[in-house]
Amino acid sequence: MRKKVAVITGGAKGIGAATVRLFSARGYSVAINYRSSESAAEKLAEELIYGGGQAVTVCADLSEMRGAEKLHSAVIDAFGGADVLVNNAGSCEYGLLSDFSEADIRRSVGDDLLSAIFATKAFYDDFAFSGKGSIVNVSSVWGLRGACMESVYSAAKSGVIAFTRSMAKELAPSGVRVNAVAPGVIATDMLSRFTSDELDEIYSAIPLGRAGTPDDVARVIYFLASDASSYITGQTFEVGGGYTGA
Image (cartoon, rainbow, N blue to C red; front, side, top):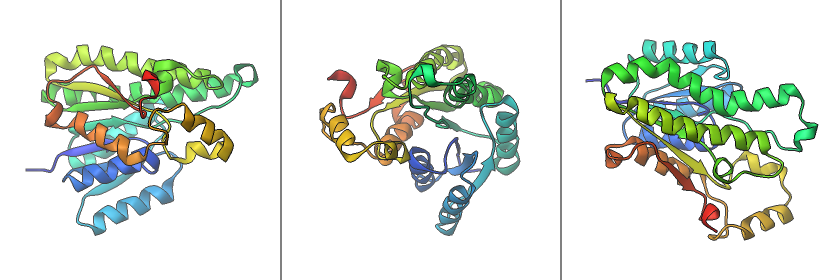
């Protein structure tokens, strides 16, 4: 019998890389999708293979349907199918809406919402006809609450939550579960734009008083993909130190 297979989009760095490592450690074969972080993706795959795991890397831009189809074909060729799809790929446009170009807006929506829709569509029949599997979408606390200076990102991530709820209802009769995580302030490259004083101000608004780690998010993603959450679907789990409840 083949190992279970997890496909992690945006899997080369940050939350994606932590998720890749966790699924591999739990015995999954993993497909690491990336768009531009080739060296990081290849290094991560080598690390997992050296440790006895199975991993492939797939370069594909998921903001376009053809990129999602390329990812699907590569996974089928490498592993024969997928049991888990983690839609983590995304980017973050930061600034006033008045300063955004049309290209900026389209890029943000493509990276942060359409990527999840296109990847899910590419794997849709595989999940629906297999009668099992789990899809976990990565949204954001800003998708729950909205954020100044991140209006388009917030709108796209809110769309991910609505998409999660809709897909959960649509795929439930097929035995497929669809959930989402909403990370808060996580110690990734996205924090590099802030000064130490700005970070202190951000942390002061978080009840736990600190940034989370990529591993904090990865563990929730794994839980939602595992049989431990077999009666959970259509839900969004905040991983934000209590931020939205404050």
